[in-house]
Length: 341
Image (cartoon, rainbow, N blue to C red):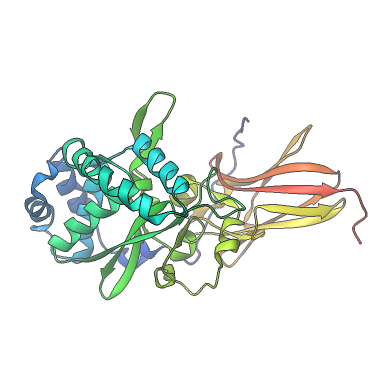
C-alpha cells in the first residue's frame, strides 16, 4: 500500500499533553543519555559497578532512571527465537503448570547465560536488568507481567500472558516504561536485531499503555479505567509509531466495526501538545479505491481530533489513521446492504 504526501502550510495547536514525560518537561536528559552512551558495551557481570557508573554523577532520580533505561535499551538485544520457543512452551503447558515449571527451570541457565554473556534476552530479561540496575541505584522499580497486543497476538481473542515491562517510582508516583519495545525489533527475514530506539515507551501515558499492555495485577493499570481483558483484545490496533507520536485512539473503541450503507462513522484520537495537524490523515481503503481525508484545525475540539466518513457502498474496508504517512491506528469496517435511517 502506497501513501503520498500533500504539501500544506504547517499548522500547530496547543493542547493538553497526556504523556507522563510532561511531569519532567523541565529536565534535560542530555547528560543522562551521554553517560549511558559512554558505557556502551559494558559487561553485565558486575551490575553493582555498572549501576554506580550510570548514576553516580546524576542528581535526580529521574535522570538516574533515564541513564539506566537508555543503557538497557541500547545494549540489550531481543532473543527472538528463544522468545518464540518460550511462547510455544507456555501454550503447550497452558494447563500443566508443573510441566512448564520443570521446562522453565531447565532453560533458566541458558536464559541467564545468553543474557550475561551475549546481552540477548526476551522481555523478561529486559525487565529484570532494568529492575536490578534501578534497585542497585536506590530506585524503586518493579516488573509487571501481563498481556501485550500486536497484529499477531491478543487480537479479538485472549491468548496467554506474553510480555513483561516495568514501573518505576519517582517522586512518590509510579511511571511506566517498556525497554523491550523501545530498543528495536527483530527482522526475521535477515535474522538480525535492528536497534531502533523509540522514546515513546519511556514514561508513557497509562491511557496509551493500556491499548497494548494489560497487567495481570490490576493495580498496575495506573489510570482510572475499568477496561476488561475481553475489551482489551477488541481494541483498535496500534503500533510503535503510535507511541512515537503519542496519539491515543478514542472512537471507535473496537477494531471491528459494522454499519449499513449510508451510515457515518466518526474516528477520534486524543492528541499531544504542539501536534502538527497537517501530518494526520484518515485512509479509507476499499476493494477498488482508496480515499484520503486530511485533518485540519476545524476537526479539533480541545485535544480531540475527529474525522468522519460515510460508507455508501457495501464491502469490507480497512481504515487507518496515519501521521507523516506512518500508520498509527487501524480499524476494519464491514458495510452491509441496507438503508441507514
